[in-house]
Amino acid sequence: MKKNVDIYYSLRVYSTCEISLNEIQDYYNAKYQQEITGKWEGISAGGCQNNTATYKNNPLYQLVLNNSEANNYLKIELRAPKQYQVGFEILCKETKVSNAAGQFQNADSGSYRPGFCLLTLDNIPGGTYTIRPATFDSGKEGPFFLNIASSHHYTLTRIQ
Image 1: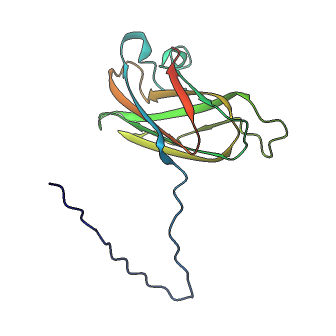
Image 2: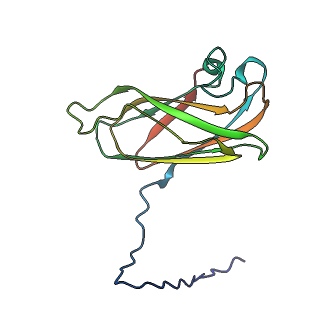
């Protein structure tokens, strides 16, 4: 028999000026979440963009946001062994929204980090995107987990 347990957290905030705290809205519905297990091995362990000859060999995933709205939210998480410095880029291949304000072209997870990186994107138009996870150094072989959460339905498939 399972028991329902309520958990409460306490937060103290100190400030020298007036502030206001509000609950953060969660745009990433668990209903639209998927985790894929991948692996850098052999030729697909291409390293970062500094490795111009091998970077293109890293695994490549296609994400299709299946709507024609301009206000999608995405959360992309890459996890790998802690000894690897990891990062990824996301590129827009095609949008289903004409006249989308501030048309999204590309983004990356920032500086390569040990074993984990995260990127959230707001107001992304429906369309087709590619995601390329990478380690900083080429030749680093090992597993990774790519977790995508979205405000709307999507499909995610490996294309390379």
